[in-house]
Image 1 (cartoon, one colour):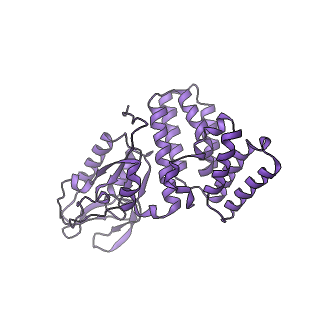
Image 2: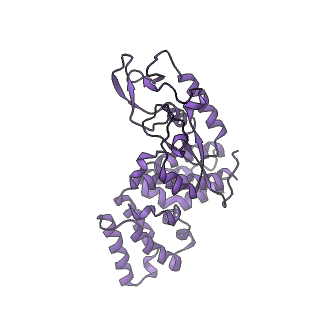
Image 3: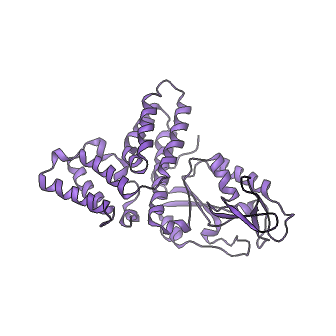
Amino acid sequence: MAEQTPATEEIPVGISACLMGEQVRYNGGHKRSRYCLEVLQERFRFEPFCPELEAGLGVPRDPVRLVGALGEEPRVVGTRDPSLDVTEALAEVSRAFIERHRHLRGFILMKGSPSCGLERVKVYHENGMPSHADAGAFVRELRRHFPELPLEEEARMNDAVLRENFITRVYAYDDWKRHVEATPSYHALLQFHSRQKYLLMAHHVEAYRELGRYLAESGKRCLDEVMNRYLVRFMEALGRPATRKTHANALMHVFGYLKDALDGETKQDLLAAIEDYRQGHVHLAVPIRMINHYVKRHGSNYVREQTYLDPHPYELGLRNAI
């Protein structure tokens, strides 16, 4: 069992070392991320890793690239010296890293890297001509051996929806690690699902229904099996970014718990805010703030505990831009 992080500490998140300003790039440079270091580092405890450096490639070093045919897992070989093949070395250090870092809640990756690129990394034919695109070698090992871990490229976090989605997944996974994995039980799993219901609905309504049915039928199954299957599906579902339509649907479900306690004018104001958001006239923060105001006064404990209403620190302002 991974050691749990006390609630008073920052959340442990992996990051490509070059994004921390470490001079580990093939050319001796770095790709320091201001957003990670000046914003997210106040909330996350970053644990940097450079798989290429760990695999024995020096700094500076001959660059490497992915080489292979479509449908094959590409190899990682030298750009200038094709006899340099670090495929196995990268796989070995990647698996060792994963084994030591099961406590992580996410990983922020360097775009385009043959080791750390999340997607659209160029793969070349043996003759040096471009072939297709794939994920980096380290990312493939993460997906193979740590599929529930939230992953995102630093550059893609310039997109407000992708940024909010990644940080939502990190905090949801942190909830799981603290409150389910730390003290595993059917009760802890059901409580987790209960408070994550509308967050799950906003991202993937089919998965929301599917996981609800699965838990209802899982009481006699092995707990480890149930937890593993639930977590992989839950994190996969959250990986689908919510849309204005799916957010509006979740908001309407929360509104349903309040409507009997509100007067007609207040109900119309809330419905108008949700519709304004759905049509793209305001950001998500507007209806969320209004609903939170009334949930605190009139909501049941069940609604108040919904992580959807407060999935990450308000100070990050993530819902002010989506």
